[in-house]
Image (cartoon, rainbow, N blue to C red; front, side, top):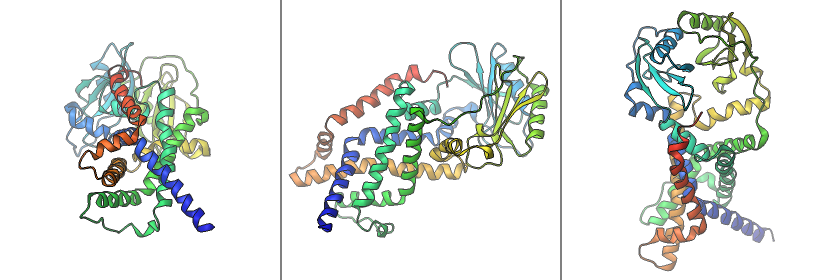
Length: 394
């Protein structure tokens, strides 16, 4: 009795694995591919935007105040909104300025000379990949649950793949067999699946967490006290605020400065807490009098908040710099390839069974049924919405 039930159970798992891998392959491939590219979205922008590129130097960089002053002089009629430190030594400083209507403008500043190297509109590669991967350019209340529901399906696909792969732990070093396209594709699919097993679980769990947040499970975000509006500090005035923040929290590595209309100047970055977003560590200062109005420390987060702040670094692999980003990119590419090879396996199996010469992918398309059109329609809709959506607010 136990043996037939086990076989039936494996069969059910196989049906689920095949259904997800085939029916949703177009949509899943698109989301995985855009997420994989999003890991290096800033670097892609760096490649296509000359104003973002500088040559690293040995001397100390200019001050935050000098960077802010350069941006303010370049756009005297705009309000300085955010100031970002260089991601890597070969990146410029990036500033966002608000012209009062429409999306912010980006102004790039050389970190060493504090000279403006160029300006750019809001739309760029990072903005496109972020929005199309996160919510398909749809309203976030619709797009985020739609995309994040794939986290649940990815988890089911992961479990079903392990259950149906007998003695899977022996396959880590099993070389793909040649001589037959279907056999080679199947072996590659299983090999990539095993080596990306932990990564697929991580992506599935963080995707599920984003779904939970969208459905009302967001962690509490600290509210900043309101202060009287005052002119945006630049130059020496901003440098004094930076010095106050560093005295208040010596371990804070400032990565971003936000100039809030009614909440003062907020300096954010990394500190003693590991694996959290920059916003988890912050010092908010009233620029009118230099008084610290709020301190945030990632070490004091409760469990709910900690999970929320860990999600992004884990999902995109940004916590370890370039090396973790390379690893996340390679594993993301492997998962994308698995979504493609899953459809290929189905197509070649049907082609062989029906003894059809050629047209295997046509068989796969027919096997997807209505879901092929749904996936393709969502992708085309996202691309059609891009010109309007990509220029929206952050």
